Amino acid sequence: MNANVALSPAELAQAQLDAYNLQDLDAHCAFFADDVVVSDLNGAVTIRGIAAYRAKYVQVFADFPGNRAELKNRICVGATVIDHEYVDRGTGVTFEVIAIYTIAGGKIARVDFAK
Image 1 (cartoon, one colour):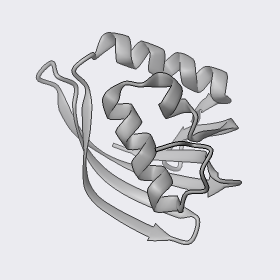
Image 2 (tube, one colour):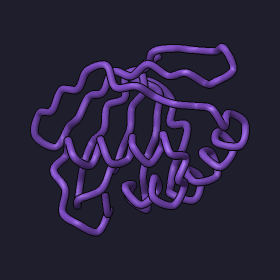
Image 3 (spheres, helix red, strand yellow):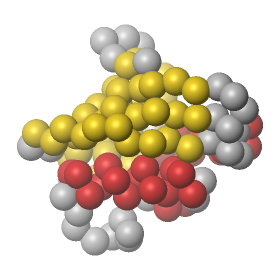
Image 4 (cartoon, one colour):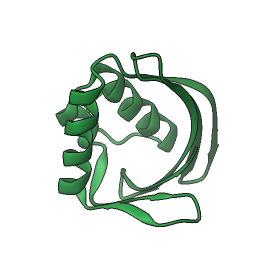
């Protein structure tokens, strides 16, 4: 799916997840705003800006080439999408995460993670 096409919040969340699972860094990052903010739920900001986001996922994809996230549940309310995901690093390490995506201007502007 192309990030240049107007997508609903749910379609945007799915498209970035699909690109993440393909480890297609350019496609994945295209769904995020230039000033994206990533934080722990009710906690510290861990990433600020698309350059920092890109650098983080260059490292994640390099460290975990077998990494995949399976969508367990999705809730959409307005411009907010909440995904419950099961992540398998491909190394025997698995965990569950909740990603809360805030959509603005057709891009993911903020992600809050609970793990």
